[in-house]
Amino acid sequence: MRCIRRVLAGAFLTSLLSFAALTAQISFEIAPFVGGAFALTDLSGGFTFGTVSFEGQKLEPALATGLYAGIRMSPRLSVEGTAMVSPSVITAPSTDLSTGSTETGFYNAATVSTFAVNVLLNFPGEGVLEPFVTGGIGVRHISGTDPFGGFDSPSNPAFNVGAGLRFKIHPSYAIRVDARDYISSFAAAEDLGDTTTLTQHDVVITFGISFY
Image (cartoon, rainbow, N blue to C red):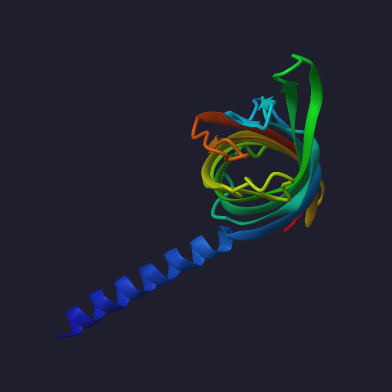
């Protein structure tokens, strides 16, 4: 009986020490950021309204603001969530089918909301610079006004890959730079019968401050 108690006590102590060692490595990181969002590809599809044809719907470059918040499980491994909002404009060149003339087209105010969970692989060193690579999955939602009544505010899964750099200026905070490519598949934002889908690439470059 005493032997069993000793084994159980040893197992409990070992588990407690392992948990304490793991907890000692865990830290939290919160990083508010601001940056820019740039669509590398047009939104898919097109449509005709009366005698005017619209093709090549595109998200214009826009300001991006948000927050990274996560847990650093070890010096090399982090898991974090991303919440980001980018107020943008969707444009589409228009062609008058009766005359053949082309104009800038319509302007449709749109807000892109992005939520994602990412894994970060950090490369800590002796200096003040700490690079990292990251990948994750989430959802992107486009909402906005629409003069034609066909905007369907689509939401789609979005993968993302990227890299970044922390510049440690203090044990409790660092300057952080991120670059990520959000990859999603949207049908035509102006959904008037066109169900074409294409892969959408949106690059977001952000600058923030990490607090530990």
